[in-house]
Structures are given as structure tokens and as C-alpha cells.
Image (cartoon, rainbow, N blue to C red; front, side, top):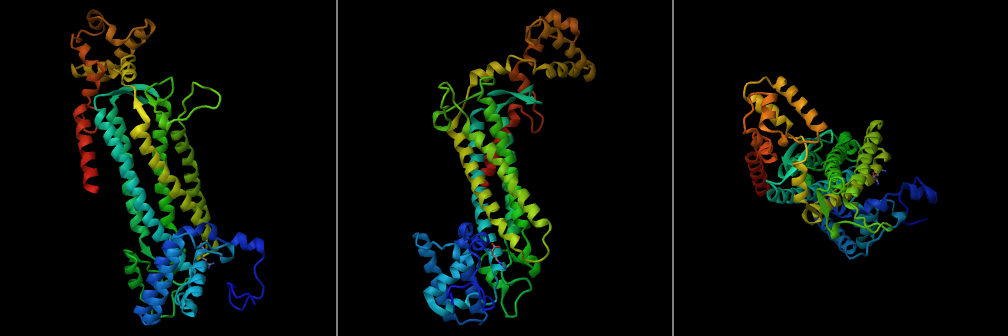
Amino acid sequence: MNKNKTWSDRFEESLHPTIAIFNASIGFDIELIEYDLTGSIAHAQMLAHTGIISSIEAQQIVDGLEQIRQEYRQGNFNPGIDQEDIHFAVERRLTELIGDVGKKLHTARSRNDQVGTDLRLYLRDQISQIQKAIRDLQGVLVKQASEHIETLIPGYTHLQRAQPVSLAHHLLAYFQMLERDWQRLGEVRRRTNTCPLGSGALAGTTFEIDRHYSAKLLEFDQVYANSLDGVSDRDFAIEFLNGSSLIMVHLSRLSEEIILWASHEFGFVSLTDRCATGSSIMPQKKNPDVPELIRGKTGRVFGHLQALLVMMKGLPLAYNKDLQEDKEAVFDTVKTVKISLEVMTILLEEGIEFKTNRLNQAVNEDFSNATDVADYLAQKGVPFRQAYNLVGKVVKHSLSSGKLLKDLTLEQWKEIHPAFESDIYNAITPRQVVAARNSYGGTGFEQVRAQLQDAIDLLGQSS
Ligand code: ARG
């Protein structure tokens, strides 16, 4: 008989080789190994604490598991497809190392609560790493913002020139989005940090275990109150994919802006050689591959979220093998979000240079000060809607004569409305247009300085 067989003596034949490949998750769940070892160590210690195994046995098990950790770290633990998954692979190796005592590890436990524990340990760790990467990106945004408070950039709605804004204001909008991402992940982490260990296969166990003990060893904040829920809940993974999708939405929007800004048509930024690529045929090209790839990778993260939602929707309680599909979705998302945050940080740090001359020219070449003319009249008592219509006519005439608002003579202004005085010229300079928007959260320089200080304080507090 095959001494490496997986199942009980109920099975006489081994698995069809193709089905063995199809069934196995070891190809990807090796990612969980360190968490599996940590979870098993806590389980063994709990078994000793409750007297289910002796403390000598527990110590042998813990030593064996630590040895496997060393083997893995040295590259000497490479289980094959015949091991099916990481849980079996570790248990087998443990038994090879320490003999029959190794077979006691799985007392009062199932792979169902085991894999749930591993995935949560993995994810809470990864979430903390992603939160750190978000903070790094926020740090670079703050740095760029502090250098560009007085740099003006056209602000758009409908991708039409709307009103000029401080470039710092624009960059700090992304700081705020990322702040929500950071907080959202913190909330997800809190719910992820719930321990299913001891739920058994689905119904709990006949052994007098102490779930709170193992949960405490593993630094979980709480334990699942219901064993069926414990082994079949993947809400935390879906919440993580949702939080990740929103991070990618934000990175993708920023990417799209950088791509536009780097185009000849906008010309607001240039890309540095270290962060851009060339074309294999067109020697003049410099391509924004980095933001394009971030934008492109966003789709796969959304796909993983969708995959998990659909996978879960029809599952009866409790564990079903479908749940094995959660791993690749989560692992790939972790990898994608981390690298995307990291490269965006590099891109903002040393990959783009704002072309301040071109930006200055841009904010001086359009009608994005038209609202300010209407506001000027409204402040002198003309009802805003009436002022708005008057300015609309002026814009129309100016457009047909190829002139800008600043080109009108004072007589022309007065013909439009007698309330205009010579201070209209100052009121419509881009600098004044920006400075005047001093409402809370607006782009006025005072507001932007305050916003920047808050951002700096926030980063200081949480580091
Ligand atoms: N490899 C499995 C997974 O990832 C582990 C749990 C298997 N449990 C079972 N009853 N077949 O979900």
C-alpha cells in the first residue's frame, strides 16, 4: 500500500493523475506556509495547554514545525503536486521529521478551520504592508504638493477647461482618496482579525479545546462565535478585494491624468528616462508605460472581486471546495496592489517633472476666469444669473474675435455693465482667480496651505 496516501483506509485506489493536478492547491498555497506553521504552532500549544497532548509532545511538534520553517527559508522545502496542499505537505514533513507524534497535530482540527486561519493571518499581515505602501505614496504627494502650492494648472470638468487650481490642491485630492483607502483597509483588517480555529470541519469538536487561548497566541482580536460561519465565511476576503479595487480606481485615475498630461496635446509633464520607455520603431517616442500598466492592472483586481462574489453566492453552508478558489484571487490582488502603489510612488518621486512654463501658459490662454467675472458683478449686487448671462455673451463675442477676457478695454467692460471698474483686470488673473477661492476646502492658497499642513500632521501622527 502507498504509505504516502492522503485519505483513510476507506479509499483503495489513488486519485486519477489529472484529477490530482486539478484538485491540488500546493502550486499556489505554498504562499501560506509561514502562516500555516505559525497557526499550527499555536494549535499544538493549545492542545498542550488543555491537556489534550502532553507538553513534551507539543514541544516536539513545535520544534519540528520550526525546522520546516528553516528548510523552507533555505529553499529546501519544495512539496510537489502529490502533497495536494500546504496543510498536508507540512503535516507529512512533520511526521517524517518527528515520527508518529507529528500525527497528533491534527487532533481537534480540520483543514477547513486551518485554511481559514492561515488566510486570515496572511491577509492581516499583507493589509498592514499595503497600508504602509499607501502612506509612502501619500508622503510623495505631500512632498510634490509642498513644492507646487503656487503652481497653477487648468482644472477641468467634463475634460473641458473649467477653473484654474493650485497644482498642490490637485495632488492633495489624491492624498484624500488614499486616506480613505488607508482607513478602509484598517476596518477590513479589524474584521479579518477574527479566529476560526477550533471550528473544526464545521460543527466544533468533541475535544475540550480552548479557542480563546490559541486565538490569543495568534494575536487575533476575537473568535468566530459560530463554527459554521467560521469555516465558511470569506466576507473578509471580499472586503479586502473591494478595498483593493478602490485603491486601484484611485491609482488608475491618477495614471490616466499622468498619461494625458504627458501627451503633446497637454504637455503639462515630462517623463524622466528612468521611468519611461521607448518605441521599437518610432525613435521620437517616450511612452508612459508605467501609468498605463497600473491602469491596465486595475481590471484584473476588479475581476478578482467579481470572481469571489460569484463564487460565494450559491454556496450552501459550510465548507465547499469552491473556497479553494479564494486564494489565487487574494494573492494576485495583494501582489498587484503592492507593486502598483510602489511604482506610483517612484513615478511621482522621480518619474515626472511638471513643466511650469507650459502650465503657466495654459492657465493664461483660456476663459477659465469667466466665472470670476460673473462673481465680480454678483458681488456688486447684480443677481448672479443675470451676471452669468452677460458674461456668456462676452465670451461668445471674444471667441469670435479671437480675444481673451483680459484683452477687453475698460470702456468695453463698462458697456457690458457700468459696475465694472479697473479692478476687474486683477480679479481675472489666474493667480487671483485661484487665490479668491478661499472657502473651506477650496483651492485658495490659504486653504491649500492649511490642507497641506493637515496632511503633514496626519502622516506625522501615524508613522
Ligand atoms: N486546499 C483547501 C483550500 O484551500 C484546504 C481545505 C480543504 N478542505 C477540505 N475539506 N477539502 O480550501
